[in-house]
Image 1: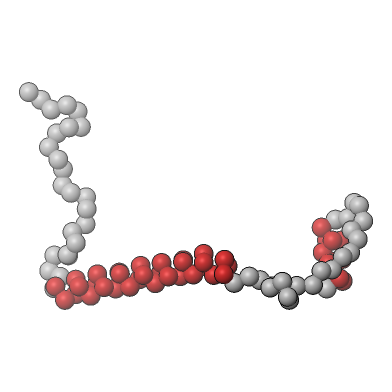
Image 2: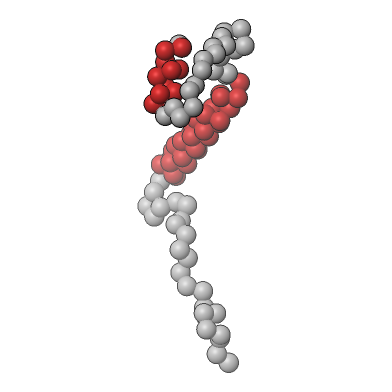
Length: 88
């Protein structure tokens, strides 16, 4: 009986072996440790970029100052930017 199309014998594995041919155990362990440290550093950096803005506000309520100004109707974004800059 013939196998169904695409269901023949499994081909060679496409996965890369964990330990390269001829690689010493010491270099393998060093490579695994280096990958682990790299992933840990990346996770710490990504976590810091996500968590830091949550706990570090731009300006506290005691540092903020309310500024009122009038924006005439029909003002462009450049006009509003100039008004904000003038108001400080």
